[in-house]
Image (cartoon, rainbow, N blue to C red; front, side):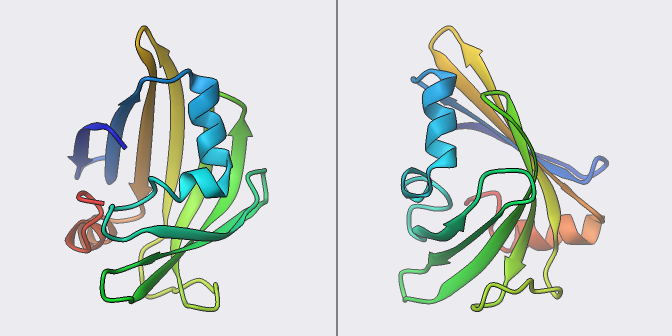
Length: 147
């Protein structure tokens, strides 16, 4: 993903990623809603993602894992809260156990993916909002800014 900036806001308990793409919003939107396309760019390059479920509709669920270079799997999930086609979608984003059940020992956050047209293509803004400063700092320490 061609990231242009990552902003950590400790007061707002948020982490915001800005990325720009040389494609229309509709093309970028389609890539996020198609699990096979999303796997090509979700997470760090060294930790490829595999989506085993991707129900991109309010009330839907996505299950995925990222695999480390050593073969270790790190599981996560999204619960889809709201979807406005070609504009934004909101998910509850959490860590999971290997069986897909939520891991309550790790932070949960709310992520909003906003899609905006630009003269060169489109801009994606992903804002993750956490319940506490501790939760934000924990995911930063786990590498969320680099990923």
